[in-house]
Length: 407
Image 1 (tube, rainbow, N blue to C red):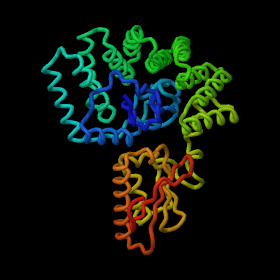
Image 2: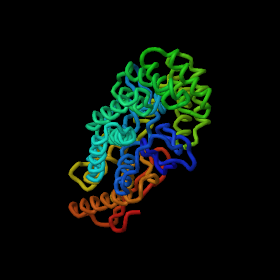
Image 3: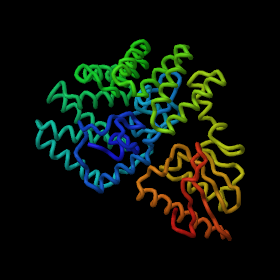
Image 4: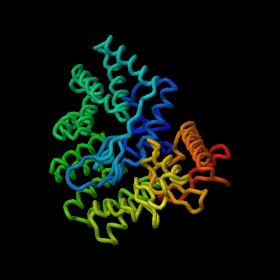
C-alpha cells in the first residue's frame, strides 16, 4: 500500500518514502492501516490533518518535564520524531475541529459493525485506528480509541495494534510507566519497529533513565541506520548530559540522513546557533523561536498585533482577518505593510504547496472575500494585494487579490 499523505499525521509524503518526514511513521508497507474511508471522508479528514499542524512535529526541546505530542498535535519549540519521538511538545493544544458529518457517520457505522461482531479483531482494528486518528483533531474520541484498543488486547493479549495503540495513548497522556509497559510488550514481539522503540527511548528519558534511552536509540540505529529521528533524539540526551560534542555529532547525522530540505535547514540552523553562541540545544531552540529569529525588524512577535496599526482601520481589519483564522491564524508570525494597500503576511510552518487544492482554494477565496469586505467598509481606493510569505524562505506562497480569482 502506498500513500500520498501520511495516514498518521496527514503530512505530504515524498515519492517512495518508507517513513513519513513529519511523524516518522513507516508508510507504504501495508500493515494495520484502517479500512478505506469514503472518498469525501478521505478528502475532509486528510485536509483537516494537513491544515491542523502535521508538518512540523519534529522540533521541540523543552526543559524539565514536557513530553512530545503525538502526530497531529501542534506546539511551539523543537524536538524530533519521538522526542524524543513523534511529536512536538506539551504546549498549545490542537485547534478544535468539528469533524465532517460524513466522518462521524462513518465512525458510527464502524462502531455498530464492531459491536455486532465482538470477536472480529479485523473490525475492531479498523475502528480503533479510525478513532485514534480522529482523536488527533477532536480529543473527545480518545476514550473511544482506548476502549477499542483495550478490546483488541482482550481478544488477544499479544495483539500488536492494541499494544501499540494503548502505549501511544499513555504516551499522549504522560502516563510514562504505562506507555513503557505497553511498548515493551509490543517490542518483545516486533523488535525491529524503529518508531515504537524510539518512543520507548523517549519515555525512559523522561523517566530520568537517560542510559536506557540512549541504549534504545542505539538499538534503533543498529537495525534502522537511516532513521534520523533517533539521531536527533540521541543528540538531545547527550546535550542534557553536558556532552555537546556528542550531541552535535548526532545532530549532524540527523541532518545528513534527512531527505526533507526543510528539516535539514532546521537542524542546520539549530547546530549553527548552538555552536556559534555556545548554547545548549534547548537554549538554541528558544533563540531560534524568539522574536528576533521569527520576525523582521520592527515586526511584532508571533501572536501579537502590530501596535502601529489601529484596530479600527482597513489595515487593522485585514490583520484581524488573517490572524483570526482558526487554522492558519496561529501560523502568522508578522504582518508587514510596505504600502498602504499591500500587506505581507509572514507565516511559519504553513507550506501551502502541500495543501489539498480544494482546501487551498477555499482558504484563499475566504480571505479574498474578507479583504474585499474590509476595503468596502473603510472605503479604500486603489488596488489591494496581500502576499502570503513563508517566513523561513521569504518565498511568496500565494497572493490574495480581491479583484481577481485567488492565485
